[in-house]
Image 1 (cartoon, rainbow, N blue to C red):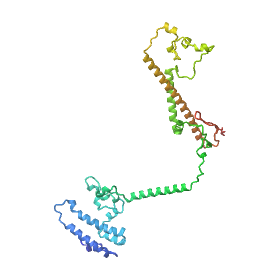
Image 2 (image 1 turned 135 degrees about the vertical axis):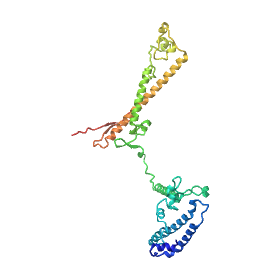
Image 3 (image 1 turned 180 degrees about the vertical axis):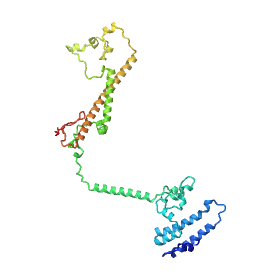
Length: 366
Protein backbone atom coordinates (compact mmCIF):
# COMPACT_ATOMS: atom_id res chain seq x y z
CA UNK A 1 0.00 0.00 0.00
CA UNK A 2 1.42 3.37 -1.02
CA UNK A 3 1.59 6.45 1.17
CA UNK A 4 -1.26 8.18 -0.71
CA UNK A 5 -3.53 5.18 -0.21
CA UNK A 6 -2.84 5.16 3.55
CA UNK A 7 -3.70 8.83 3.88
CA UNK A 8 -6.91 8.45 1.81
CA UNK A 9 -8.08 5.51 3.91
CA UNK A 10 -7.98 7.74 6.97
CA UNK A 11 -10.73 9.90 5.45
CA UNK A 12 -9.23 13.14 6.75
CA UNK A 13 -7.44 15.93 5.03
CA UNK A 14 -3.71 16.12 5.93
CA UNK A 15 -3.05 18.96 8.41
CA UNK A 16 -0.73 21.88 7.81
CA UNK A 17 2.94 20.88 7.49
CA UNK A 18 2.23 17.59 5.72
CA UNK A 19 4.03 18.76 2.59
CA UNK A 20 7.24 19.18 4.63
CA UNK A 21 7.46 15.58 5.87
CA UNK A 22 5.77 13.87 2.90
CA UNK A 23 8.97 13.42 0.78
CA UNK A 24 10.83 11.79 3.66
CA UNK A 25 7.91 9.49 4.43
CA UNK A 26 7.76 8.53 0.73
CA UNK A 27 11.41 7.45 0.94
CA UNK A 28 10.71 5.35 4.03
CA UNK A 29 7.71 3.79 2.26
CA UNK A 30 9.85 2.89 -0.77
CA UNK A 31 12.50 1.29 1.45
CA UNK A 32 9.79 -0.65 3.28
CA UNK A 33 8.44 -2.08 -0.02
CA UNK A 34 11.96 -3.14 -1.02
CA UNK A 35 12.52 -4.85 2.34
CA UNK A 36 9.19 -6.66 2.12
CA UNK A 37 9.82 -7.94 -1.46
CA UNK A 38 13.46 -8.83 -0.88
CA UNK A 39 14.09 -12.60 -1.19
CA UNK A 40 14.88 -14.31 2.08
CA UNK A 41 16.13 -17.69 0.95
CA UNK A 42 18.93 -18.98 3.19
CA UNK A 43 18.04 -16.60 6.02
CA UNK A 44 16.58 -17.38 9.39
CA UNK A 45 13.00 -16.47 10.10
CA UNK A 46 13.96 -13.70 12.51
CA UNK A 47 16.78 -12.47 10.29
CA UNK A 48 14.37 -11.93 7.36
CA UNK A 49 12.32 -9.34 9.30
CA UNK A 50 15.24 -7.36 10.66
CA UNK A 51 15.26 -4.78 7.79
CA UNK A 52 11.49 -4.24 8.25
CA UNK A 53 11.88 -3.59 11.98
CA UNK A 54 14.78 -1.23 11.30
CA UNK A 55 12.87 0.89 8.77
CA UNK A 56 9.80 0.90 11.00
CA UNK A 57 11.96 2.17 13.88
CA UNK A 58 13.61 4.88 11.75
CA UNK A 59 10.24 6.18 10.50
CA UNK A 60 8.71 6.29 13.99
CA UNK A 61 11.83 7.96 15.40
CA UNK A 62 11.73 10.58 12.62
CA UNK A 63 8.18 11.60 13.51
CA UNK A 64 8.88 11.38 17.25
CA UNK A 65 11.92 13.70 17.05
CA UNK A 66 10.08 16.21 14.86
CA UNK A 67 7.34 16.58 17.45
CA UNK A 68 9.02 16.13 20.86
CA UNK A 69 12.61 17.29 20.30
CA UNK A 70 12.65 19.66 17.32
CA UNK A 71 9.00 20.73 17.67
CA UNK A 72 8.62 21.31 13.91
CA UNK A 73 5.20 19.68 13.51
CA UNK A 74 1.91 20.30 15.22
CA UNK A 75 -0.05 18.02 17.48
CA UNK A 76 -2.66 17.48 14.73
CA UNK A 77 -0.07 16.34 12.21
CA UNK A 78 1.55 14.05 14.82
CA UNK A 79 -1.82 12.41 15.54
CA UNK A 80 -2.59 12.20 11.81
CA UNK A 81 0.63 10.17 11.27
CA UNK A 82 -0.36 7.79 14.07
CA UNK A 83 -3.86 7.34 12.67
CA UNK A 84 -2.44 6.56 9.23
CA UNK A 85 -0.16 3.87 10.75
CA UNK A 86 2.93 5.82 9.68
CA UNK A 87 4.32 5.74 13.23
CA UNK A 88 4.05 3.20 16.05
CA UNK A 89 2.13 4.85 18.90
CA UNK A 90 2.98 2.14 21.45
CA UNK A 91 6.67 2.28 20.64
CA UNK A 92 6.77 6.06 20.94
CA UNK A 93 4.91 5.82 24.26
CA UNK A 94 7.71 3.58 25.54
CA UNK A 95 10.34 6.11 24.44
CA UNK A 96 8.85 8.62 26.87
CA UNK A 97 9.64 6.36 29.85
CA UNK A 98 13.00 6.28 31.59
CA UNK A 99 15.09 3.32 30.52
CA UNK A 100 13.27 2.84 27.20
CA UNK A 101 14.78 5.79 25.32
CA UNK A 102 16.74 3.56 22.93
CA UNK A 103 14.16 0.82 22.45
CA UNK A 104 14.26 -0.31 18.83
CA UNK A 105 11.02 -2.29 18.77
CA UNK A 106 8.38 -3.70 21.09
CA UNK A 107 9.61 -7.22 20.44
CA UNK A 108 12.77 -6.46 22.44
CA UNK A 109 10.81 -6.28 25.70
CA UNK A 110 8.59 -9.30 25.08
CA UNK A 111 10.39 -11.81 27.30
CA UNK A 112 8.16 -14.67 26.20
CA UNK A 113 9.86 -14.64 22.78
CA UNK A 114 13.36 -15.19 24.21
CA UNK A 115 14.99 -18.42 25.32
CA UNK A 116 16.07 -17.16 28.75
CA UNK A 117 13.31 -14.63 29.46
CA UNK A 118 15.57 -11.57 29.11
CA UNK A 119 15.38 -8.17 27.41
CA UNK A 120 17.34 -6.81 24.49
CA UNK A 121 20.36 -4.58 25.11
CA UNK A 122 18.49 -1.58 23.71
CA UNK A 123 16.37 -1.69 26.88
CA UNK A 124 19.39 -0.35 28.84
CA UNK A 125 19.79 3.48 28.70
CA UNK A 126 22.78 4.66 26.77
CA UNK A 127 24.08 6.58 29.76
CA UNK A 128 24.38 3.32 31.70
CA UNK A 129 26.00 1.23 29.00
CA UNK A 130 29.64 0.22 29.40
CA UNK A 131 32.33 2.09 27.53
CA UNK A 132 33.20 0.73 24.05
CA UNK A 133 36.04 -1.75 23.88
CA UNK A 134 37.95 0.56 21.54
CA UNK A 135 38.45 3.14 24.31
CA UNK A 136 39.00 0.75 27.22
CA UNK A 137 42.64 1.88 27.38
CA UNK A 138 41.48 5.37 28.41
CA UNK A 139 39.77 4.08 31.56
CA UNK A 140 36.16 4.48 32.67
CA UNK A 141 33.96 6.71 30.56
CA UNK A 142 32.68 9.54 32.71
CA UNK A 143 28.95 10.08 32.37
CA UNK A 144 27.20 13.37 32.90
CA UNK A 145 25.91 12.34 36.31
CA UNK A 146 29.47 11.47 37.37
CA UNK A 147 30.67 14.88 36.24
CA UNK A 148 27.86 16.58 38.16
CA UNK A 149 28.72 14.70 41.35
CA UNK A 150 32.41 15.50 40.98
CA UNK A 151 31.70 19.16 40.24
CA UNK A 152 29.38 19.52 43.25
CA UNK A 153 31.94 17.92 45.53
CA UNK A 154 34.69 20.20 44.22
CA UNK A 155 32.57 23.34 44.62
CA UNK A 156 31.54 22.30 48.13
CA UNK A 157 35.17 21.86 49.17
CA UNK A 158 36.17 25.17 47.62
CA UNK A 159 33.37 26.96 49.48
CA UNK A 160 34.46 25.34 52.76
CA UNK A 161 38.07 26.40 52.18
CA UNK A 162 36.96 29.94 51.44
CA UNK A 163 34.92 29.97 54.65
CA UNK A 164 37.92 28.77 56.68
CA UNK A 165 40.18 31.41 55.11
CA UNK A 166 37.75 34.15 56.05
CA UNK A 167 37.48 32.83 59.59
CA UNK A 168 41.27 32.75 59.86
CA UNK A 169 41.53 36.32 58.59
CA UNK A 170 38.87 37.60 60.98
CA UNK A 171 40.13 35.69 64.02
CA UNK A 172 40.91 37.72 67.11
CA UNK A 173 44.34 36.65 68.46
CA UNK A 174 43.27 37.54 72.01
CA UNK A 175 40.10 35.48 71.88
CA UNK A 176 41.46 32.28 73.48
CA UNK A 177 41.50 31.94 77.23
CA UNK A 178 42.74 29.00 79.31
CA UNK A 179 39.50 29.10 81.26
CA UNK A 180 37.89 27.49 78.19
CA UNK A 181 39.73 24.21 78.81
CA UNK A 182 40.19 24.44 82.58
CA UNK A 183 36.49 24.36 83.45
CA UNK A 184 33.65 21.95 82.88
CA UNK A 185 29.92 21.56 83.50
CA UNK A 186 29.24 19.00 86.23
CA UNK A 187 26.43 16.50 86.66
CA UNK A 188 24.24 19.11 88.31
CA UNK A 189 24.64 21.58 85.43
CA UNK A 190 26.96 23.95 87.36
CA UNK A 191 30.07 25.29 85.62
CA UNK A 192 33.11 24.62 87.84
CA UNK A 193 36.86 25.11 87.65
CA UNK A 194 39.02 22.05 87.07
CA UNK A 195 41.93 21.72 89.43
CA UNK A 196 45.20 21.46 87.47
CA UNK A 197 46.85 19.30 90.15
CA UNK A 198 44.22 16.68 90.84
CA UNK A 199 41.92 14.71 88.59
CA UNK A 200 38.60 13.42 89.84
CA UNK A 201 38.49 10.51 87.33
CA UNK A 202 40.97 7.84 86.37
CA UNK A 203 41.44 6.54 82.83
CA UNK A 204 39.28 3.49 83.52
CA UNK A 205 36.50 5.64 84.97
CA UNK A 206 36.51 7.84 81.87
CA UNK A 207 36.29 4.85 79.54
CA UNK A 208 33.42 3.21 81.46
CA UNK A 209 31.61 6.43 82.35
CA UNK A 210 28.75 5.87 79.91
CA UNK A 211 25.51 4.80 81.57
CA UNK A 212 25.03 2.16 78.90
CA UNK A 213 27.93 0.27 80.50
CA UNK A 214 26.36 0.14 83.97
CA UNK A 215 25.04 -3.42 83.78
CA UNK A 216 28.29 -4.61 82.21
CA UNK A 217 30.40 -3.05 84.99
CA UNK A 218 28.13 -4.56 87.65
CA UNK A 219 28.53 -7.97 86.04
CA UNK A 220 32.33 -7.61 85.95
CA UNK A 221 32.35 -6.49 89.59
CA UNK A 222 30.48 -9.62 90.66
CA UNK A 223 32.87 -11.79 88.64
CA UNK A 224 35.89 -10.19 90.34
CA UNK A 225 34.39 -10.64 93.80
CA UNK A 226 33.72 -14.33 93.16
CA UNK A 227 37.27 -14.90 91.91
CA UNK A 228 38.70 -13.06 94.94
CA UNK A 229 36.64 -15.21 97.31
CA UNK A 230 37.80 -18.34 95.51
CA UNK A 231 41.48 -17.33 95.75
CA UNK A 232 41.14 -16.42 99.43
CA UNK A 233 39.55 -19.77 100.19
CA UNK A 234 42.42 -21.58 98.49
CA UNK A 235 45.29 -19.51 99.97
CA UNK A 236 43.79 -18.68 103.41
CA UNK A 237 45.82 -15.43 103.34
CA UNK A 238 48.67 -17.25 105.07
CA UNK A 239 51.69 -15.70 103.42
CA UNK A 240 50.27 -12.63 101.76
CA UNK A 241 52.74 -9.82 101.35
CA UNK A 242 52.31 -7.38 104.22
CA UNK A 243 53.88 -4.03 104.88
CA UNK A 244 54.25 -4.54 108.66
CA UNK A 245 57.34 -6.15 110.19
CA UNK A 246 58.23 -8.07 113.35
CA UNK A 247 60.14 -5.71 115.65
CA UNK A 248 62.16 -7.12 118.57
CA UNK A 249 63.43 -4.83 121.34
CA UNK A 250 66.75 -5.42 123.17
CA UNK A 251 68.42 -3.78 126.16
CA UNK A 252 71.58 -2.31 124.64
CA UNK A 253 73.58 -2.00 121.40
CA UNK A 254 75.92 -4.91 122.26
CA UNK A 255 72.96 -7.24 122.55
CA UNK A 256 71.56 -5.91 119.26
CA UNK A 257 74.86 -6.63 117.47
CA UNK A 258 75.07 -10.15 118.88
CA UNK A 259 71.37 -10.88 118.30
CA UNK A 260 70.71 -14.26 116.65
CA UNK A 261 67.20 -14.60 115.12
CA UNK A 262 67.50 -18.39 114.78
CA UNK A 263 68.29 -18.74 118.47
CA UNK A 264 65.59 -16.26 119.46
CA UNK A 265 62.81 -18.00 117.43
CA UNK A 266 64.29 -21.46 118.16
CA UNK A 267 64.12 -22.50 114.51
CA UNK A 268 66.64 -23.32 111.77
CA UNK A 269 68.04 -20.49 109.67
CA UNK A 270 66.42 -21.93 106.55
CA UNK A 271 62.94 -21.30 108.00
CA UNK A 272 63.44 -17.70 109.14
CA UNK A 273 61.96 -16.30 105.93
CA UNK A 274 58.64 -17.99 106.58
CA UNK A 275 56.08 -16.06 108.62
CA UNK A 276 53.74 -19.07 108.80
CA UNK A 277 54.14 -22.76 109.76
CA UNK A 278 57.57 -22.16 111.24
CA UNK A 279 58.26 -25.18 113.48
CA UNK A 280 60.74 -25.04 116.33
CA UNK A 281 63.96 -27.06 116.54
CA UNK A 282 62.59 -29.31 119.25
CA UNK A 283 59.59 -30.19 117.05
CA UNK A 284 61.81 -31.02 114.14
CA UNK A 285 64.01 -33.29 116.27
CA UNK A 286 61.09 -35.19 117.81
CA UNK A 287 58.95 -35.52 114.67
CA UNK A 288 59.84 -37.00 111.36
CA UNK A 289 58.88 -34.62 108.58
CA UNK A 290 58.55 -35.89 105.04
CA UNK A 291 59.92 -33.16 102.76
CA UNK A 292 59.96 -32.95 99.01
CA UNK A 293 62.96 -32.17 96.94
CA UNK A 294 64.38 -28.65 96.91
CA UNK A 295 63.19 -28.04 93.34
CA UNK A 296 59.62 -28.98 94.25
CA UNK A 297 59.69 -26.65 97.25
CA UNK A 298 60.92 -23.76 95.11
CA UNK A 299 58.27 -24.46 92.48
CA UNK A 300 55.53 -24.49 95.12
CA UNK A 301 56.83 -21.22 96.58
CA UNK A 302 56.87 -19.64 93.12
CA UNK A 303 53.30 -20.75 92.44
CA UNK A 304 52.11 -19.40 95.79
CA UNK A 305 53.69 -15.99 95.15
CA UNK A 306 52.10 -15.88 91.72
CA UNK A 307 48.67 -16.59 93.20
CA UNK A 308 49.11 -13.88 95.83
CA UNK A 309 50.16 -11.40 93.15
CA UNK A 310 47.03 -12.22 91.16
CA UNK A 311 44.92 -11.84 94.31
CA UNK A 312 46.33 -8.36 95.02
CA UNK A 313 45.67 -7.23 91.46
CA UNK A 314 42.11 -8.52 91.56
CA UNK A 315 41.47 -6.74 94.85
CA UNK A 316 42.68 -3.46 93.33
CA UNK A 317 40.51 -4.01 90.27
CA UNK A 318 37.50 -4.80 92.45
CA UNK A 319 37.98 -1.50 94.32
CA UNK A 320 38.26 0.41 91.04
CA UNK A 321 35.11 -1.19 89.60
CA UNK A 322 33.21 -0.48 92.81
CA UNK A 323 34.10 3.21 92.49
CA UNK A 324 32.98 3.19 88.84
CA UNK A 325 29.62 1.66 89.81
CA UNK A 326 29.11 4.26 92.54
CA UNK A 327 29.79 7.13 90.14
CA UNK A 328 27.57 5.66 87.43
CA UNK A 329 24.72 5.10 89.89
CA UNK A 330 25.09 8.72 90.99
CA UNK A 331 25.02 9.91 87.38
CA UNK A 332 21.90 7.83 86.74
CA UNK A 333 20.13 9.30 89.77
CA UNK A 334 21.08 12.83 88.72
CA UNK A 335 19.74 12.30 85.24
CA UNK A 336 16.47 10.89 86.55
CA UNK A 337 15.95 14.02 88.67
CA UNK A 338 17.04 16.51 85.99
CA UNK A 339 13.44 17.61 85.34
CA UNK A 340 12.46 17.74 89.01
CA UNK A 341 11.52 21.04 90.56
CA UNK A 342 13.89 20.51 93.53
CA UNK A 343 17.36 19.83 92.20
CA UNK A 344 19.96 17.92 94.28
CA UNK A 345 22.64 19.96 95.99
CA UNK A 346 26.34 19.15 95.82
CA UNK A 347 27.70 18.50 99.31
CA UNK A 348 31.18 17.19 98.55
CA UNK A 349 33.10 17.04 95.32
CA UNK A 350 34.11 13.62 94.06
CA UNK A 351 37.67 12.36 93.77
CA UNK A 352 39.40 9.57 91.90
CA UNK A 353 38.73 7.17 94.79
CA UNK A 354 35.29 8.32 95.88
CA UNK A 355 32.08 9.45 94.21
CA UNK A 356 30.65 12.90 94.79
CA UNK A 357 28.08 13.44 97.56
CA UNK A 358 24.73 15.04 96.68
CA UNK A 359 21.84 15.87 98.92
CA UNK A 360 18.31 15.39 97.57
CA UNK A 361 15.70 17.66 99.07
CA UNK A 362 12.55 16.03 100.35
CA UNK A 363 9.46 16.94 98.35
CA UNK A 364 6.26 16.56 100.30
CA UNK A 365 3.47 14.78 98.48
CA UNK A 366 -0.04 15.99 99.02
